[in-house]
Each structure stands twice: as structure tokens, then as C-alpha cells.
Amino acid sequence: MPKKAIIIGAGIGGLSTAIAIQKKGWNVSVFDRTSSLTEAGAGIVLAANAMKALVKLGVAKDVVSIGAAVGKAEIRTWNGELILDLPTSRQAKRYGSQSFLIHRGKLQSILLEKVEEASIVKLNKQLASVEQNNDKVIATFTDGSKEEGDILIGADGLHSIVREQLFGTLQTRYSGYTALRGICSFKDERYTMEQGGGFEAWGPGKRFGFSQLGQGQVFWFAAINAPRGETISSNDRKQVALNHFNRWFEPIQTVIAATVDGDILHHDIVDYEPLPYWSKGRITLLGDAAHPMLPNLGQGGAQAMEDALVLARCLAEPHINVNLPSSLQEYEKIRKQRTTKIVQQSRRMGRMVQLENQLAITVRNSLLRHVPNKILIERLNWIVGHKV
Image (cartoon, rainbow, N blue to C red):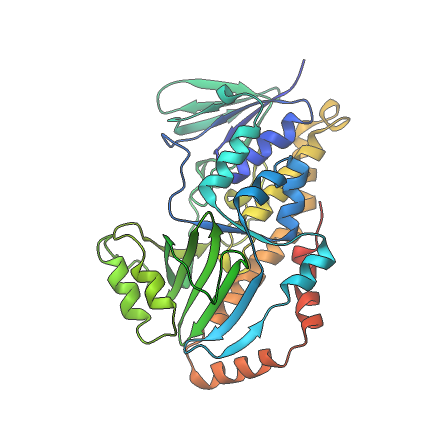
């Protein structure tokens, strides 16, 4: 009889896991606390390692058809001076895949369609508690319903209830900057939809990113050094962004202005101190629930998909006939070193790009302008060149 996995969370990590372990012969049930699987106002970058994972999940062609290939990736100063023009074509040639940008909601829909049965994903299911014994794990939901399985996978994101059940309440680490994000319809002859990609602009204590999202839309984000916990109402976010980036080079102001009032997202950027371990018995964590990372390397979704594929491999024969808790520990052992390193590197990157001191900024920009393309590619090879 096939084994049964309970997956908490129907985001990118949870749905990727459902697909991957279904391929290994498992039955799955996915539960999500939301009433619909729509992620508003956010784009996700999929580097070569993410695209390779999507190939194994069987959905890469769908992503390519809907998303936008990254043809241009510039780093500029706040007033438009070029710092770096990243060698995207050379990277694509080396890794056999371009990077793509896609709306998170569209990627989620693509993954959902790949899950073998729509009835597997159940919404409006808020996890209340988890219990386990030597034979099974039981999830209890706030509506009083219960679900039994052989294992439970917590893929429920940054504020994971499964992680809290296992390890108690943990304190988030604030990065020192807050983010505004938006999507709008926009055209600019300097950054065309056909070319794809876009730029990041770096200024003292803040940066702005712009990239083609596909289907006539662009995604933008702003990262701004700020005290933790400052609230910006939805009606004020556009004006706050316009004020922060006043006099920055075009098309920054125009892109912000083109975004619908009230559609701009705002949140502080946080992560957690890496956990000493992810698994207890028949329960394990995956994606942001296990290793939330700052978005500076664009690897959050990619690492969740890599987790899913490795977990599926560890749950395949002959492992499931031996010891399921050991299989979960094996998954954790394979993945933990890599994800911890990326968490740490993402924090270091954030400190470098959010500099406020003008002398430090001048030195940083000067050094980056003189880095050969070959060195740039090599420094990212361990991340984007990785293949599960």
C-alpha cells in the first residue's frame, strides 16, 4: 500500500514536494490556511538551478511560455551610472538555461495543475497541532478535522506553524531594511519586453529593482534602510516610494507612478538564525519553514524546489522500507549545509548593497566595475550551477 504524506502549505515548496513525491509513488494531501492560492503583486526570479529543478518537476516548458527570460541584468548607481552589466548570455550558455522571471501566482498555478488530483489540495485548513508516534503522524486543524499520514512536511513558510510545533516560537532577525513591491503595465525602449530583464539601482541606504515579468507587465521592488516595524498604509505606499526615489534616474519614478494605488506591498525583510536541525521523528520542514533567507540572491523559491527533489529521492525505494525518520534525517543532512551557506551569503550581500557611507559606496562601486565577467560567473557558480 502506498505511503501517505501530509504537506502543510500549498506554496511553491509544498506543491513542488507534492509533485516530486507523487512521482515516487506516494499519496499526498496538501493543506493550506488560505481561501485561495493567489499571491498578489510579487515576481520571482528563477535562475538556472531553479529551471533545472522545474525540468525535473515537469513544468519548465510552462514557465518558459509564460515568464520572461532575463536578457539584461544591469547594476547602476542612483543617478544611472553603470556599475556592472552582468553576463547573462554567457551564464545561459554555461548552464544550458536562461534565468526567468514570473509572477509567483502564475508559478503556483502551474505547479497546482501538475499535482495529479485537484482534490489533493485542501484550502481553509489552519493547522492547530501535530502529534506522532512510532507508526504515524496526526495533524489536527482548527475546524476540528484530523488527517493521518506516515510523515508530515511543514512547507508553511516564514511563519511556519509546523516549525513552532517542533521548536517553539523563534525570534526573527531583522535585516535592517524594509521592502515595497509592485507590478504594473509599463513599456520603455531601454528595457524592452523582448529583451527581458532589467536593472538594479543602488543608492545610499536604498536600492530599486526593475525587471520584465512577461505578458506586458514589469515587477519592481524597493529596499530601504529603516527602523523595524514602521507601518505604511496601503494608500500611502506609492507616495512613500516616490519620495524615497525622487531624482533617481528614469524610468524609476515613472514605473512607481504607473502602479495602481493600493496594490503596492510592504513588509520588513527578515530571516531566522539557521536551525540546528529540521526534523523530529516523522515530521520535517522544507523551504522557508526550514531555512528562510533574505531575497538578495533570488534563491528562496529555488531552494524550496531543490529541497522537494532531494526529499523525494530520500523517500523513494529502498528508504521507505527501512526507516522513515532516518530518511527525513538523510534529506536534512544532504540539504542543510547548502541552504545555511546561502542564508549566510544572502545576509552578506544585503550588507554590501544597502551601504550608507559614501566612501564605502565609492570603494564598492569602483571594485565591482573592475571585476572580470569570468570572475562574476565563477563566484555564483556554486549557487546557480548546482543541479540536484
